[in-house]
Length: 222
Ligand code: 3PG
Image 1 (cartoon, helix red, strand yellow):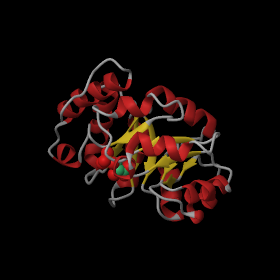
Image 2 (cartoon, protein in one colour; image 1 turned 90 degrees about the vertical axis):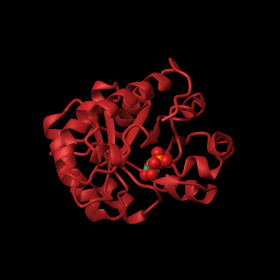
Image 3 (cartoon, protein in one colour; image 1 turned 60 degrees about the vertical axis):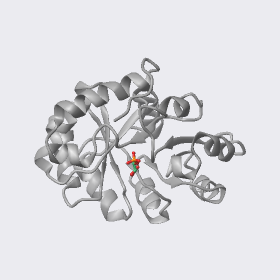
Image 4 (cartoon, helix red, strand yellow; image 1 turned 90 degrees about the horizontal axis):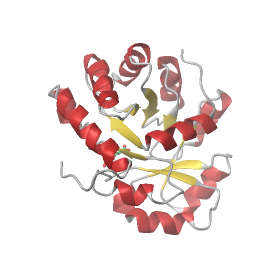
């Protein structure tokens, strides 16, 4: 099991990588080539979502074989998934919403956890747990950067990881808002590209994503 780093260190690292690839992986054999493609493209980070039965095994292989990739678990809906993520070496846990049971479990075990919010009431519920960095999901359907700035205004100490509908064309507008730690997204590694083993394509799109995140490129149509 990988020792956890503090939430402050996770956030510092995410502020450097700026893009968190959101990964849905069906075949654990794809995990390592996928991780290498992301890293080779300049995105040394991934959120492996617990939407498939092979998520924990995929995480285990990535943390064992591509240790430079900063790997967390996503779509963690129940404490058992947080436990599986911890055992597989995940460095952080992300969720689309706020599950008090998941947050309690992660806090009890020292696992950095970033629950999802989309309303002021949800921000306040998460704040009550002591967590000040939250996923903002689903970012674009909720109203994008304008909505995020409005919801962020009253909560001056809260930082966000917007996810949902973000791509190389709009990521710059999110990252320009100082209260955004990083943005999540699946556009550089969609499930069908992974299933088709198009790892060179994923590497190339990751490179464009990394360049867009650093302000070195303009919109790219995928
Ligand atoms: C998530 O789980 O965070 C989202 O499904 C990712 O959103 P995207 O597929 O629109 O990037």
